[in-house]
Length: 247
Ligand SMILES: CCCCC/C=C\C/C=C\CCCCCCCC(=O)SCCNC(=O)CCNC(=O)[C@H](O)C(C)(C)COP(=O)(O)OP(=O)(O)OC[C@H]1O[C@@H](n2cnc3c(N)ncnc32)[C@H](O)[C@@H]1OP(=O)(O)O
Ligand SMILES: CCCCCCCC/C=C\CCCCCCCC(=O)OC[C@@H](O)COP(=O)(O)O
Image: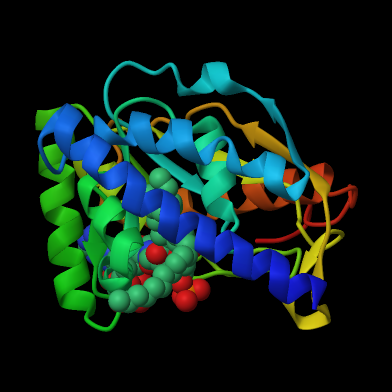
């Protein structure tokens, strides 16, 4: 019951705050623009206090690259939205599944914030959207946040990475900045109806350059990011030593 209440409250908070924040975004910035993310971030950063969540963030200076970049992070739950807003740099939009667009007021606020919607059921259309993003992110000087696991995964490990984010980085010739959140398993597990207060360690890792790389290097780049993020995930989650031999 406690779990249902807390998760239910999270949903209600998201829906109500989206409904209240959307008119503010429209009044201040006029329509769909990444500038609205600043407003959304300010609102969402207060959510953690309702749930007793604490974030311990390291490496924020690694976001200070000049110009666009691809940010990749692990994706455990819908609660990630709080961790995302905790560290989100200015001028950064996320890639999200298109179903989010139809989630009522939450859909509206993600639309206004400039979220890039992709259709996961059509590889061709997802690739076309990503290729377009490679061009516009340079022109508009935006950073793009992608969850390379492609879906939520709360097992305490990483799913294999999809390569879209890394194709995008190579096509745009921009650095990849990995961000890792420690495992939620000690305080959040929907299968066990567990959702208590807890601490989340976040580490922004140094940028990985892609200048001069071509599509032939995408697999290696993906593996490199995967390995470094998996090692970091285990270290932050108190499971050091694991993940070192993965390939
Ligand atoms: C104020 C109160 C507010 C309240 C709160 C509300 C909202 C807050 C506002 C904003 C926050 C929003 C947060 C949104 C978060 C949303 C998170 C998600 O939705 S995660 C799910 C969606 N994301 C992803 O799926 C991204 C990762 N996926 C990929 O990158 C995929 O690769 C893909 C591009 C989607 C394609 O996937 P698909 O499964 O169809 O194919 P494959 O990955 O198997 O690839 C096939 C093949 O193609 C090659 N490939 C892939 N991409 C490219 C490309 N761009 N160019 C060329 N080739 C490409 C790939 O390498 C494969 O080939 P091969 O096997 O030979 O390597
Ligand atoms: C008129 C329709 C009304 C529907 C209302 C539904 C509203 C949903 C409300 C609140 C949810 C808040 C979520 C914040 C956004 C978090 C995005 C997210 O984490 O999406 C999950 C997605 O990354 C991966 O999806 P899958 O794991 O593949 O699945």
